[in-house]
Amino acid sequence: GAGVSQSPRYKVAKRGQDVALRCDPISGHVSLFWYQQALGQGPEFLTYFQNEAQLDKSGLPSDRFFAERPEGSVSTLKIQRTQQEDSAVYLCASSSPYPGGSYEQYFGPGTRLTVT
Amino acid sequence: AQSVTQLDSQVPVFEEAPVELRCNYSSSVSVYLFWYVQYPNQGLQLLLKYLSGSTLVKGINGFEAEFNKSQTSFHLRKPSVHISDTAEYFCAVRYNQGGKLIFGQGTELSVKP
Image (cartoon, rainbow over all chains, first blue to last red; front, side, top):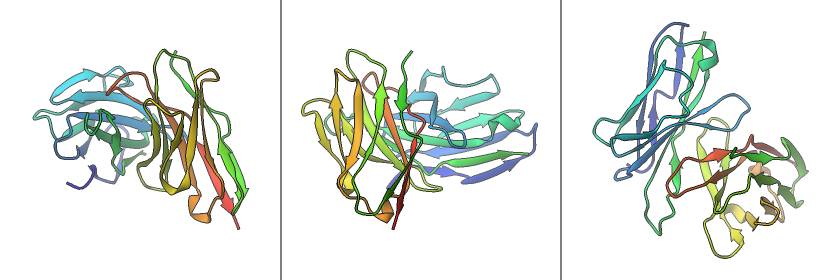
């Protein structure tokens, strides 16, 4: 596709519900990142995939957060038993080593999660 | 710890005036530096990047930034701003090829007529 897409764009969940957020990266991009952006803050790293391998999940805030990318393309971020502090915008980015090794990250529009 | 500090949370400025948004990062042997812009309810758009080479980097929409290794800074500048530049600006650093970005807290640029 032309860019990174994310769905849904908006999600309202009641506390305790499970949610799944989807990211479609740019076709052919090897790397995929998830970030969490709380209101009025900069994005914070959650996790990183290279193809289907999850190479870094050091930013996941708790074991309620789980991400997967089973075929090295689409990724899903799942949050179990949502809490109010999970309310944030979840950004997905993909990157490629080309051109010129820049590894520039291209961001999707984000999913705004509100936990009530 | 690796960190990025944006020294101003809000910068109000009049249209056609110059602006500088400040960014400092924690020192490292090699860094890759970025400025992103975020318009309301949108994702992040890359303004410019420093990977290596010339320390003065030019980006889109008339923005430029200068990498200063001794000061560990990467300040963003524009000589004349427009109303349409009103947005949130984020400085980010990457400490290795292909790795995660570490973002500053953001600077809200508000351009007034």
